[in-house]
Image 1: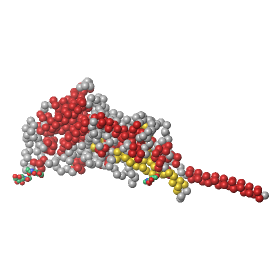
Image 2 (image 1 turned 90 degrees about the vertical axis):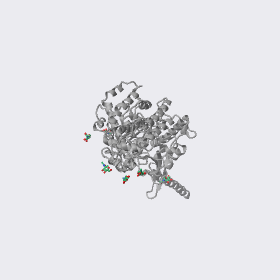
Image 3 (image 1 turned 30 degrees about the vertical axis):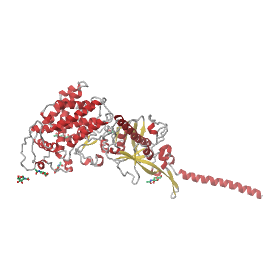
Image 4 (image 1 turned 180 degrees about the horizontal axis):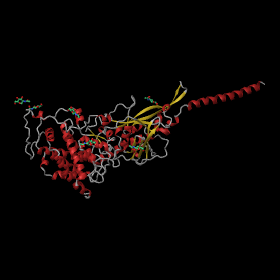
Length: 629
Ligand SMILES: *[C@@H]1O[C@H](CO)[C@@H](O)[C@H](O)[C@H]1NC(C)=O
Ligand SMILES: *[C@@H]1O[C@H](CO)[C@@H](O)[C@H](O)[C@H]1NC(C)=O
Ligand SMILES: *[C@@H]1O[C@H](CO)[C@@H](O)[C@H](O)[C@H]1NC(C)=O
Ligand SMILES: *[C@@H]1O[C@H](CO)[C@@H](O)[C@H](O)[C@H]1NC(C)=O
Ligand SMILES: *[C@@H]1O[C@H](CO)[C@@H](O)[C@H](O)[C@H]1NC(C)=O
Ligand SMILES: *[C@@H]1O[C@H](CO)[C@@H](O)[C@H](O)[C@H]1NC(C)=O
């Protein structure tokens, strides 16, 4: 009896222990099940970022919370000290081993070995890893870009036996910050941790990686960019915002087509171009409320036909000229679209000295086709024209300087047989040539220089558009042989276009400005074959000439708000007015300088032939958060 009881009690103990264990397991299972999303934060989804994933028991709610880490990606100058997340360190994407580790970027390659990305010449495209978050690929692409383009420029410098410019010269880098998140706050329709950035930074990043926008539709929220072996698509997700997917579809090349890493990219991506009139120390268009000052020439806006027309109007072009951009059957391109002329004449230099990078995001709505002409031949044609012309306007010392510089550059261009990539010494020579003239043209603080320069640009554009639309001579160019195209074109420029610009500059007002510019830039006309100017008003109003000719004090604010009406608003009468010969000479100096600058600028910089601006200027500087799946 006693034995039976013991046996029964034993059985009961075993059963109840089993039941107890089962229910205990059930409780644990329940707790662990409360850690929802944990499976989505593991290494097979977010790669090395899974290091930041953990479960956190919440005693008040008797459940686990899943915490994980994702990147916040943005672009800033290298000197940036703070990011969107306060008190979190910034990790710069530099492409070196340390940076790959800091940003926890997966190395996509099965070759293995030490510091694998450098060994890997053939990149692998992964099609099987669809469970991975696509921002891992984005980080990988950004690191690869840095690594490969640095390797390439070092190679170029080595080939040419020149020393490469320092890293300190670049003004734009991609940064990553780490952000701790909780799965509790994930929207129901999102299954994987996402990376965060803003729409403007994403657009800048795509330009950086060599993608071009194919679709930007803000009403249907459809976004698509492609190119350089990548594709980025975006659409609207309920409860969240715009979700992008970044994929690698082919082999990416980061060589001569690499974008120059400068801060101006942040404007160029949206069709804004800072000009020589904008002080470099001032903020970019992406940091100011540009809409509040629409009539400034400190930025060109070329991102849509309407914006181009507005820019032309700001320059003071007449309605007939502006209308060409909207009229059926009107031509707005000769050997290349006219918008690139404005860009070359007024755009700021973005090349970094002692570096081989030349590409920029195209800020215009037209493609930059290199096929129909050669920039080097254009420069040679320019040099020939300026050398052959014996008009009296061409005897000024300033033209002499242009002659010397252009000769030197044409000689250097002859040395490089092919159409580029150009050597670093040649790029630096072009850069120097532009800088030399910018010291003259870009003196925006001297309101009069700005007036004369924009006057010349305006009449130049009017004359060019008239030329391509009305001139019979120009029609011959269409049937010209490719070898002589550039020479014929430049010839027309020097005859038809230049004449018109000079004709338009004979009025009293221009003479007044020209006189001031003459004194400011060249210290008054001295020497040469021309007689000393015979001022119409003698300098009797004051004793001190330099104070007479000093520009009126124009605050930068007035400069800006008055730039559209600059020609209408006349300054004081205390000025010597030059006779028409001397006015013509000064206008001719400025015109030649601008054309030469344009040719140099367009040789120095380059655009990808598939890249073209889609209207998205309203997104400039937009901090609208977007997500990368
Ligand atoms: C984020 O989480 C990690 C550990 O997972 C921790 O070391 C770090 O301090 C956290 N950062 C913030 C800002 O809370
Ligand atoms: C956006 O898509 C809608 C509908 O497909 C279309 O009507 C509209 O023209 C598109 N907008 C742009 C800017 O392409
Ligand atoms: C030029 O065109 C604009 C808009 O099309 C118009 O408002 C303006 O009156 C025109 N100016 C002249 C002088 O025709
Ligand atoms: C110019 O010089 C004369 C004497 O040579 C003097 O009387 C006059 O005040 C001076 N004018 C000015 C504006 O300095
Ligand atoms: C003219 O004025 C400037 C500055 O106002 C001064 O530096 C210069 O010496 C003056 N010249 C003469 C001849 O008085
Ligand atoms: C231009 O500047 C002057 C001051 O130099 C100012 O009085 C005028 O209102 C400005 N004109 C415009 C159109 O802003």
